[in-house]
Length: 266
Image 1 (cartoon, rainbow, N blue to C red):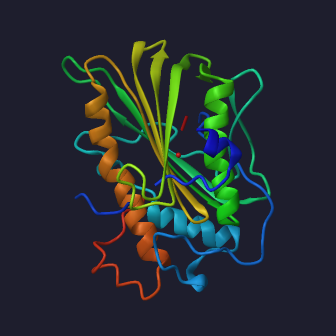
Image 2 (cartoon, rainbow, N blue to C red; image 1 turned 180 degrees about the vertical axis):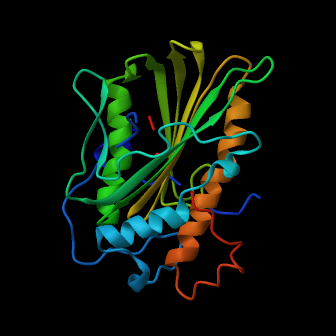
């Protein structure tokens, strides 16, 4: 955690196919050419340098509801305004603000598993953000740690809160991370007016070069933390796989890479 806050070589980390409200996070000073990520031999020509290029890549990478398993649907709203992102205020309340200059593009999509039987409704999200440089993306990851320490309890919306937050970062090579330059898992307790609480809350974020990819789950009655992790695993690994396929040298045709699922929250 101290490493993440100091930004001194903090990376969280592996990849493999396995079958409007606030969200998170921001950056630093652009350089002319993005440096390569340690986990994929990236093609400089495939790395986005404009907002339009970044947005097009995000839409190739971010998942559809089907990636989260049976019964997952699109809520309203389904996507955030791509010109804005979530910022945690001094009052520990999340709010939408215009994108900073170091962010080329970002998009958050929301998903929901409706209530069924003894289980309440689960709210899910996926977020893809493209910074101008890997260093700026690294700052975003470090900010997550700073936010948790500054605000262990946070208000997402007027009727939603997360408390008892705890973040676990991992650099490339740590704790089985062989798929991303940095990984971060945030756990907490979620409470909302319509589902009560507290219920398990999960935020998982990875950084690959100038890109950050995140998924989240807000629990409800009848859902265990393990079940929520299971719902997030494939969408998260799928995003990483599609991103690596899109930016690496000599990328295979989509059919070889398993295709692309087109499909961000705090």
